[in-house]
Length: 109
Ligand SMILES: [Zn+2]
Image (cartoon, helix red, strand yellow):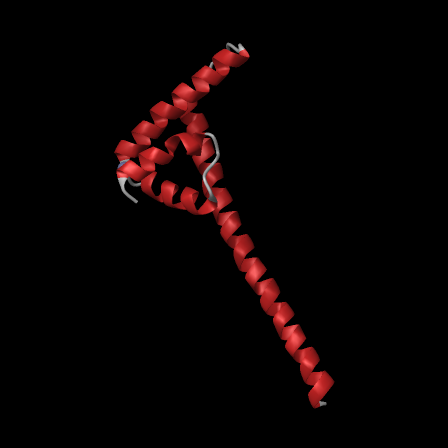
């Protein structure tokens, strides 16, 4: 992924609107690209600051920590999604094997 693509995804990342596939590519890029990570940091901080102004809360927030946490959760979501796809494949493979065994015992035995 190029920087221009990653930067184009920043607002959708912050609003949690990326697909799993986009999210995976986006995370891979920003984790290796300081420039895009800086831009994500700035956009995220501004977005959250405006959110907090809207809600009128006046606590101290550590935006860097919040972003790190969000990136961590996003990484986990991508891994869980991949695992669910693998489990789904295993599940359907299991059903296919059972179906074949069923046919085998029905017609050949
Ligand atoms: Zn970049």
